[in-house]
Amino acid sequence: MGRNDGYNTFPTRVREEILDRDRYQCQVCGRLGPERGGNIDLEAHHMQEDPDLVDRDHPDNGTTMCIPCHHLVTHRMTVDDLPFDLDGVAAEVNLLYKDIEILTYLYEHGPATTSEIREVTSGAARTSIIERLWTLMSVDRKVDSLDEPLIDKDLDTDEWGYPSDIGRTVRCRIPESEEEMMDRLRDELLRRLLDAGVSRSTVALFFGRSRRATFYISKRAGALRIPFDDDEHPNMVMDSDEFDEVVDQLVRLFQESTA
Image 1 (cartoon, helix red, strand yellow):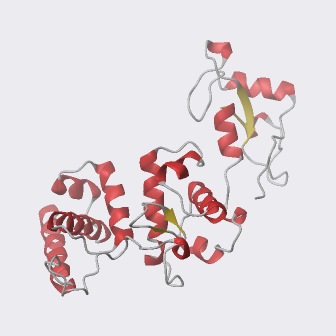
Image 2 (cartoon, rainbow, N blue to C red; image 1 turned 30 degrees about the horizontal axis):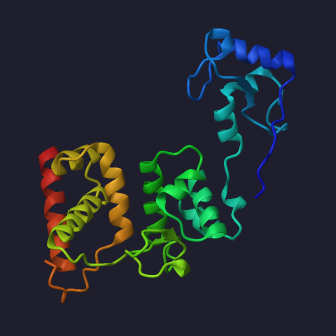
């Protein structure tokens, strides 16, 4: 995968100078080394590797990290590590290192549950992983060259995978219960208001959700997509034009209230 499996260390004297300057504290997570009563081993990390840009082993090019943080930062994957070409997508969408890990794992191992995916990603919380999964599932909204999502979710197995590996997708599905349908419409409304430029704090207050929760909800709504064109379904309470009008009215209302 093109990962770097080892560290190019600073000379011992420079390493000690960097750790002493940073008061033996990891500059990423804040944990302390034994010199200050902590129990975590510390290392000096090169911030810039290009010798044409900086004196590589100068103390100013170093920062203190604990071993777990140093490993995480040094071994992060990039789009170049993927076993397939995503350069066109990467140019239009900000793919995070967690996205690369997820895409690589699903490519090599096939469909997997959220828990299985979380186990192979770099120390990410479950909510964070689910957000990235929803994001990858909605990339085709932003990239014109894609006619399907990067990943999909199986309705029957609850597993994530590449579209060709998925049986029945959860996307563009009208829920069977009216309650779930209303939840989906509410989520889509939240997403549309954010996309229209309404402030996240205002949207969070309007829907009675935390500001943090609006990130997750908007990503999920973008991935699932409500099929407004299926207006024959008994649970489809409004068509696309009617929903657009609701969005426009609320956007105008919020704009007037902040004018």
